[in-house]
Structures are given as structure tokens and as C-alpha cells.
Length: 365
Image 1 (tube, rainbow, N blue to C red):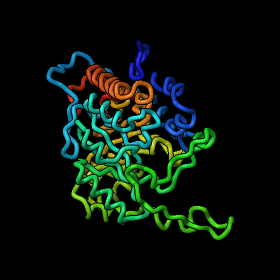
Image 2: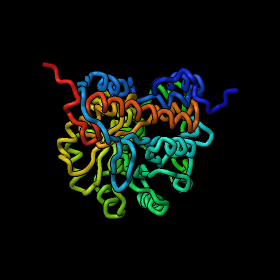
Image 3: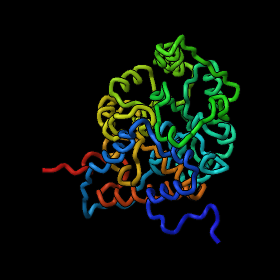
Image 4: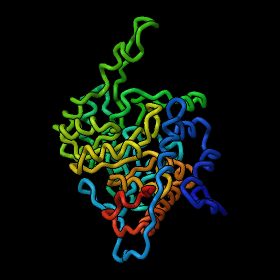
């Protein structure tokens, strides 16, 4: 007899999980997970940009002794596919991020735990079997933010991933149409006790953004302050412009994640994979560059690495797997991507991750 956590027998690829998740989740929950800002142009572009890149096959290479192992920020991984930070995993599974953590551990994948997780960061760290990084949103209360950093340090998180591309909430029309209503900040497990600040406006003619709200959003000085405050590797997530990458390096960050937030904040941005090469050129090997956005195949992972990414992060597919088959679904999603990556490496003549470069991409003429 089938159980809640059985993987449907007809699933052959990561994308097979999404329509099943749509059937099983409430409409508002699915809209929250799958939706993006405005007309979702960036969401779509994250995929079409990968599809536009062709691979060049190679034959008869000696690939004995190869593999996908790598080391990042003092952490050893068996493959370059990590679970991206995302909130509200209990929408998909009653055990929330604990279930995701079990699945990620089964797939030997690193995981980035979100500030907006449904489970306290300490409980997740105690259950982890693979390296955990902590994703931080800088709150309006900077002292509270530093307390969260200290908690992550004490719990044993191995890196701090600061999301910098969402100072304001994107207008996600699909969520609004589905009636999704998220919790207040102070209702998240990791933000209990945070006092929410309300910014009053004098009248309807006053700017909604510039009438006081922006006085509390993070700025570059907050990154400098975090750099002084923690010895953890400091990684900025949400960098799309080379100029911002350079500013981050000047402040001493240890890594950069090229990301457009899955298209959830500013619509009409380029795809993450389109922005990646320019950021990689600007960084010039000084720190590792990772990326997320649109990864659905192992060939996508290969393409990202070919353009200079050290590793990739995967968000929505993990949540779809969680919604369909719990920890087993998470592990299966990550396993499929790893298997497809290894096959693609073999067929493009790459024995190790260090062999992957621009030469695997087809250049016409």
C-alpha cells in the first residue's frame, strides 16, 4: 500500500514533481512556493536562458578516478548542489525543515537554513548530518540581528549567507490572487520576540517606500558591521551587478551568490545564469562565486559551473519534492540532479569539477 512518503513510480526527472505538488498543496501554498514578482518574466527567463546554452560533447576521454567532490568555505561536499534557503517548509510537510534536512542528508547535500524557517535554527543544527549554513535577513532591529548571528555561531553553522536583494517585498501577484497571507516577522520560529516597526504615512499622497520605511533597510555599512562582528565565512546572496560584487570584495566578504531571488523580488531582471559571467570576471578568482535560479537538470549545473560558478543552490524543486514525498522526495530531487550532472560530465569529457570550463559550451562556427 502506498504511503505519504512514497515516490510516485512515474517520476523520471525533477520537473515531474511540480504538477504533483500543485495537486497536493492548497492553492495559496502552491502560489507562495511557485510564484514570482509581477508578470514573472524573470522566473521564466531563469529557465529559458539555460535552455539557450548548448553543450559540446567530447569522446574517448580517460575519466578514471574522477568525481564531483569539492571544498567550500572550509566545508567538504561530495557534489556541488546545495539546498537553497527558503521559508515555510511546513506548507509542504508537517515536519518542516527537519524533513528537508533528512532528505538533504540522505543525498549528502549541504543546506542553507532560512531565517524564515518554521523550525528553530538550533533544533535543525542538532539534527544535521551534513554542513549547514545560515541565511540571514538583516532586520530593522540591528541588535536583534546580531543576536541571531550569535545563535547561529553557537549552534555550529559553518557560514553566514546574507540575503541582500530583498530590502522590500516583491509584489507577487500570483500569491495575492490565491489569497496567500504569510505570518508576521515575529511569528517565525527564529524571530520570536522581534518587535515589528510600523512606519506611518501622513496621507495617501505620501510615498509608500520613501516616506520613512527605507530608513530601516540594510545598507553597505551593515555588511561592514557584520564582517567585523563574526568570524564565520560571510557570503552575500543576491548579487547581480559586477559593481556590487566589487563593493562586497572591498568589505571583505568570503563569497558571492549570483541570484535574482528566483524572480520573486524585481521582475524584468536577467536570468542568474546571464548575470553570472560578468560577476565571475569581476571577482577574478578572489572568492568563490555560486549561483541559483532555474536549475532543473544536471546539465544546468554543468552549464553554471562552465561559466564560473563553484556550486549551485536549488530551491523550488526541493520544496516540490518535499510536498510530494517528504524527505524521500527531497533526497530524490537532489540525487537526480547529481546523477544527471555526472552523466553530463562524462559526455563532455570532464573527469572532475575543475575540468569543467567554457570549453564544454558549444560555440557556433
